[in-house]
Amino acid sequence: MTTIHYQRSGDGPPLLLLHATLSSSRQLRAFASELARRFSVVSVDRRGSGMSASAARAVPIDVATHIDDLVALARAEALGPAVVVGHSYGACVALELAARQPGSVAAVFAYEPPYGPLAPPRAQQHMAQVASRTLAAAAGGDMTAAALVFMEGVSGSAAVASLSPAARARIGRAGQGAVADATLSGMRPDGLGEIRCPIRIVSGRASAPLYAEIADALVERIPSASHQRLEGVGHMAPILQPAAIAAAVTAFVDEVALP
Image 1 (cartoon, rainbow, N blue to C red):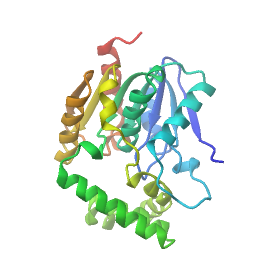
Image 2: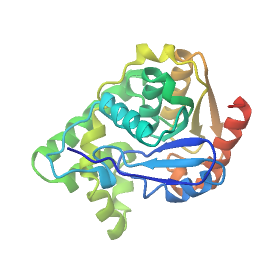
Image 3: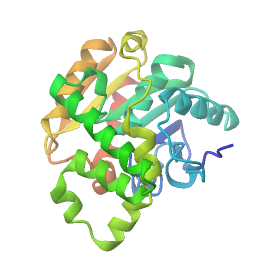
Image 4: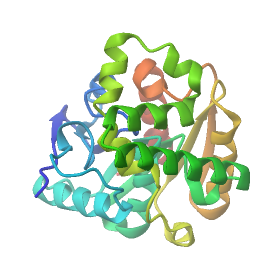
């Protein structure tokens, strides 16, 4: 049995905060603190990551399992419909939650979701290769290698080479999360058209163009979605520039005038 770790901060409307791959709620503490000025923030370690990692063998996790975890958490905390803010793969989970559990979601702010099924073919092929290499490294029992292989596939070899010893150690401990997320298991693009709550897909102009391409493809599928591009921020902005992204979240919620 896996226990899902989360922490709650702030007062106001409920907000679920979902981290990226190779990350956890701990890395989003500054972002959560900014959001807690306005919201009651429930910051979650998704299954397989952070304090929700387990001693069991690392395996890919279907997005439906993440959704079941979040529904149970929302019920336990009596959240009601919440704003859901997701970073990277956490944003993919947020979109699938809105499609499959509409009563749980008031709105979604999705920062650069790598929604593989809607990526260009060249990107889909690359994502599949990264997943295959990550799982192969994990099969050999080296979870640090699995995490670094995943990071290299997503961010490039220069990013891995530039890691400080402390950062390399932290990334190495996230191997189970890399295996959990790498295959993008279980996403249902055909269900996205059923979403009716407000959706904001956000990409940074300092990020790889792929994220904007996927955002545009998502907007074509989701009737209630819009794509916002932010100046001066990249893929790690929720971690490195939390105030800027929190301001965009607050502006979105004010714009759609949630009750």
